[in-house]
Image (cartoon, rainbow over all chains, first blue to last red; front, side, top):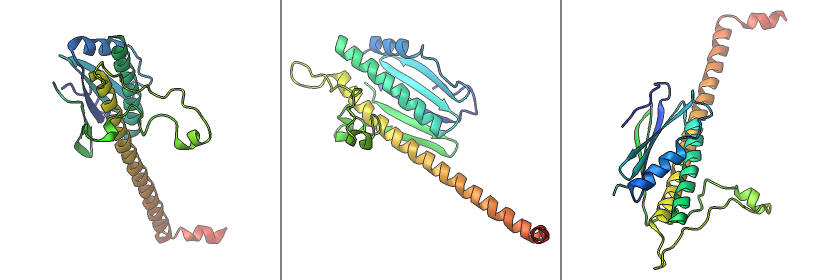
Length: 88
Length: 122
């Protein structure tokens, strides 16, 4: 697994989301990755597609920043999942 | 197929794993406990227009794979929010305790150094 590129972002969360197939995981990465990070000095995200799995590594300066960032991205992931579910 | 899961790490926490237990109701709803408006706001009459939709069902009346994934993710999101909020509270209490200890220490040192003389002069 890739580690945070900045040692000061010492609070990390690795999230693994298993989609039905590789195409869905790819759609999720493409939909999520363009979103800009508001405070890149405090929070960092790495999206990785591994077959049908979407792996997201969050790195933050503290638990507060991590909680806000992770919950926000999970909301976006849920929207992506719901959209794929409705359209297929 | 792999499982939905999360792993947390921090300088004082080597590893904390989060797994899904699909038998629990907590992981079988699209309505998260830590997301959406607070109970206070809802009791005041606010209508939650952003309420997440129910999971989609197939012809057999079963939830689709993606609907289950969304429900499991909602439960995992609650777990993460609760855990990180607890950690934030601990960090806050620790900071307050340290500030209190530093203040007491400074007051004691001030007294031992004869700092009370300054007060007498005023």
